[in-house]
Image (cartoon, rainbow over all chains, first blue to last red; front, side):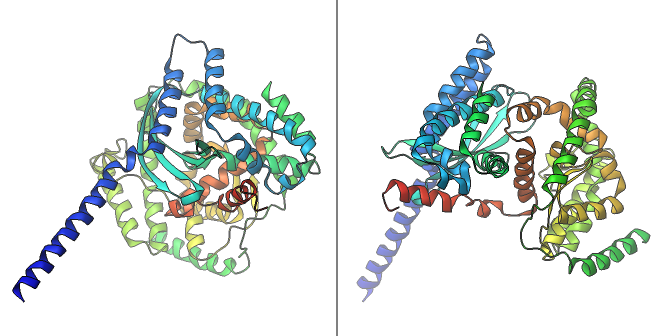
Length: 206
Length: 249
């Protein structure tokens, strides 16, 4: 009887130890998983370009555009920002639209980013959203600001299983959500004509 | 005491009126008028705020920070009243502690000592109080000088202005998107974020809609306590993309 009690006690202790180890292991490496490291790298590359004083702004803009094109899931973003109008996207206009929006997003956001100085990125945590991807929470301490700015990254996998950024939340504002509001408003004023949107995107990207 | 009676009478008026303005979602019925007022506010920004903020930007950072801290401290009593009206006693006590610390050790609020000892700034307003009381957002409006507002937020702003005119005369937390006449804060924010605002204006395909989206998103953060839980706004769309990619559609 005593032996049985002692055995149960040992099993209980081992279970608690195993549970504690697993729990601590997960929390220890929560910020160091592959997605967080991938995001951290993008952040560091971007900040190093912004802080590089030997490079002129035109060149910086091109380098930032390359980062966007490489790491954003442009196709999904393109569809998302159309809102209900994406059902009107036919094969004929879709090719032109995807190209225009790639130019628009990369150029516009590169231009917007250029007004920021360099800084340091810190990954805070990440949240697994299952097949919908992960949200990586980070904060960036820009060199000219007294307080860090929170930047969250919605990361999803593409068909090849590579990480791609679907959306970025800067100080609480989701960028793709902001664009969707703007695009759907433009389309509603122009009878849902996607060709007019393409023309406008091309003008803005120049 | 007079201040307290004034506040209580306002609560009654609001409860009375609120029954007629409960609307579940944000409506956008006045777009044409909104766009006209937006153009007016934009002209104010470009012709007055932008050039003046450049002059304001010459001030040393510590002077700007001191002024901003003092104005923020003036706003704490309004935060306390709103938290109490929301039934949030803990946050009311928290704001009271901040007010006491900054008004004494922080030399009338010039120094934000409270933040340095872990009492970080919290902001609330009567718009949030109305939300807690079950009032819907109502219409999306653009108000001259004040900028984007939902009708609930606008009504809350009127109450907040009446309760604490100094706050809105000097500092409006939404000044970054509102170009409000709360001169000092607006100038300070315009000076600090000048390039960002100008970039946004230049690169947006519809500046009015961009500001509307930014306002509504930032307002959501201000009034939803646990906005982390409220972040799944894209999921239905994302799900649809996955279904398209997986050939289910």
